[in-house]
Image (cartoon, rainbow, N blue to C red; front, side, top):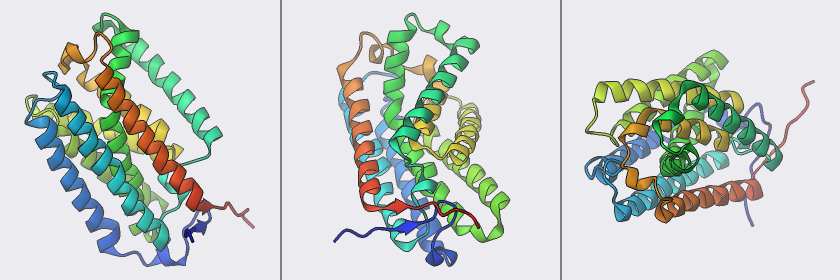
Length: 278
């Protein structure tokens, strides 16, 4: 029989009050380290985004984005569910209706921001090249959200929950933004490391604040993807963007399908019940 973890949206069960440092901090950080090294080996050393290489792109998407970026966090989060450390509300997997609304509003806000900042002017065809650029960064953004916020962020917050909401939120934002910046800096080793780190750290803080405020994985993925588009749109091999590259589309589609499968599993096996406050 499938095990179901039922808890309130605002608090975790009794078991989460005595969190383990090894399970909530050490194990997630080891996963982050493996992911960062994998990013460096599969994308940084091969200059994946600088020079088109479709085989390396498929390999990177399969290993870094899907296996380590989604499947491994899924296993770790599932264990946290069973221990009562986290629930569906906290990891950002919500109802279909709420997700569609959050995704629609977030996509519109990000698009308007790009238009007003003039980013589309750097691309000859924003709808075509911009869409391809979004799909190119989608696997990276999906893995980043699952690892940095759905896994590490919620685990860190569970570990420091007894210190209060303020400490929990600040720790979650700063630690996950730092991890985000360090891990993705390995993708662009040919750029100025300091500038790349600062840009990613700022983007990570914005994304972290958004995730902890909205608690929606899909909407946060859109925010992170648009952030990567803004930071690195001038450093991508145009061969990835025009004409529409079917391999880029396939990689983006595959990552989203795996994420949807993970969401379906959690929704089917775990339930978060909101109990009215007395």
